[in-house]
Length: 192
Ligand code: GTP
Ligand code: MG
Image (cartoon, rainbow, N blue to C red; front, side):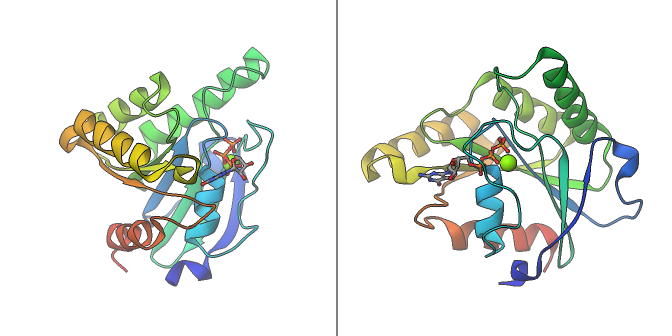
């Protein structure tokens, strides 16, 4: 697994703190508590690379990780209601600017809790990515929380709704379902 070499680079609250080079970046985005940091850790085979928390809204900054051929960006989760309005607005701005302006961005891994797929913010994220012509791969994570039939049913429903605009798969950071498929796709995106 080439991602086992992943290492933390920096946390930032502003885009001008990001590296000024041309390395491709892949963003991990999704609702707060969806399982972004857990997915990133599993993909990199490192338990504590990105911070995982039971308290939603923990990742408030963009955390960048170096991987062979590029970088992963763990984005703050959106849609978490229990934080002060100003804080929420700041995250929204940070994520929005990153997605809109960051030239290094080549694709988005959109993480959705399989029990709550395709929320308003997810749809906004898809529209944003589509607008910029970015690739999107959806991880329906926490698939371990559903039986196989129900998980498969949600997968088909989400696939149908997204049509050709994104690829979709089942994933679980708990039981590693879908891990090789996700790693393969990310290697392809980075050309490694
Ligand atoms: P924020 O950074 O707050 O936006 O959250 P996040 O999207 O990074 O989620 P995180 O990875 O921190 O996980 C949130 C909670 O969900 C933690 O308690 C994880 O242990 C749990 N979790 C994440 N992925 C899975 C999964 O695939 N299965 C199960 N059962 N729990 C998971
Ligand atoms: Mg996180």
